[in-house]
Image 1 (cartoon, rainbow, N blue to C red):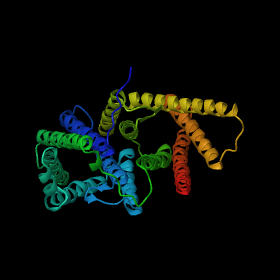
Image 2 (spheres, rainbow, N blue to C red; image 1 turned 120 degrees about the vertical axis):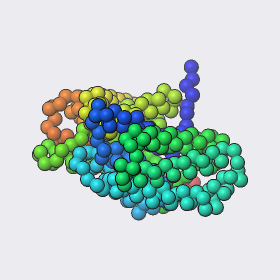
Image 3 (cartoon, one colour; image 1 turned 180 degrees about the vertical axis):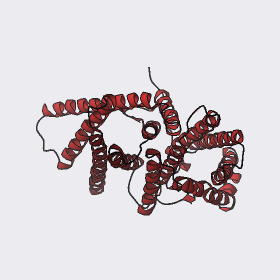
Image 4 (tube, rainbow, N blue to C red; image 1 turned 90 degrees about the horizontal axis):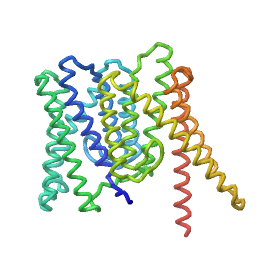
Amino acid sequence: MTHRVVWLPLEVVILVIAGIVVLTTGVLLFPVYQGALPYFENGLYGLLLIIFALQTMTLGRTPFGDLSRSKLVLALGLIVASVGMVSCLVPIPIALPRILLFICFGPGGLSLFLQLIFAEDKSKRWAKYGGIFRQLIYACGSVYVLSMAIAALLFNQRLLTTPMTAIATIVFGLAICYLAAVLLRIDRAYPDSAKVPDDKVKLSTEQVMILFTSIFMVIIGIVLIPVNLGILPFSANAQLGVLMIIFSIQMLAFGNTPVGVFPRTWLVLAFGLVFALLGAVSCIIPHLLVAFLTTLVGTLNILGGVISLVKMVLARDGHANKPRETVPPILTRLFVTQLTLSLLQTLFGTSMLVPGVVPGLVIGVILAANGCVLLYLLHVLRLLDTLRSGTEGAK
């Protein structure tokens, strides 16, 4: 029996996850406003900033329009992502996340809406194409207008009654999902029209995700030091939520799950969507899913680390039975890096499932080390890409 492999463009994946986050927020706002559930406002703001940053870093799509993925754009994306991460991890009410979101949704939405109307390569050209491209005009226009409305609510939360705010948020989430559906239809009908990042920085989308994840791990590790010293509070629910969102993006876009790489079948995509939903809820509602997600993330990390170790051992044994060849140093460095990551992943998972087995300060060091090793892995992968391009050029 064969399983159908489903391909989703990264842009569609990010929009789907953004839609899930906004829709989930709108639905949860009803019990939140009734006092039935707690609400971590900055957890939501931080998560939305992270999604904006990922879109900027992977596709060059900024809240103000498309740009080439230069070092400056990548750095700005990392700065916004870092603000979002810290906002999620440290439950201290600060205005910066809301201000940044207001800029992204308000002036950013207005800028995109004006570009949609007046730019030659947008609504004017899409209207001539007709068909699904007319729907693209409506989808983009609705998202941009609603984003400005959300910015107004960020500026003054009393503009609407609480039920109307929840309804407006749900409508915004539906508009984002509608835009994702339209882009998916266009991509399947016209694959050449897919957005390809204009690179000045030679990083694949997978490598950008490695960079993003490594920075997140380093930030968690650094934050955990003052947390364990009693200096700062810590939001475990948002940490787990962001991890679930990262898992979701990797599963939907690349088929890369915490326990290995799989073909992107409908089953893998379904798990990716469930992970996104769990991550959104965990970032928005404190304490609700902490116990469950701690067990889930811990188990997935242990399984992923052990499976990776077993694969490396079997591959090593297989090479041992072959005639000895000179192994390039770069491949040795890659093997050692992956081995270290697998050991750190297993240790982190164990610390989650067996509280107290690893001191809190040491967990922070483990996570920071994991992030640093991921950065080194990115360096090694870029060296391999350079070697491959040089070899192909020589041929």
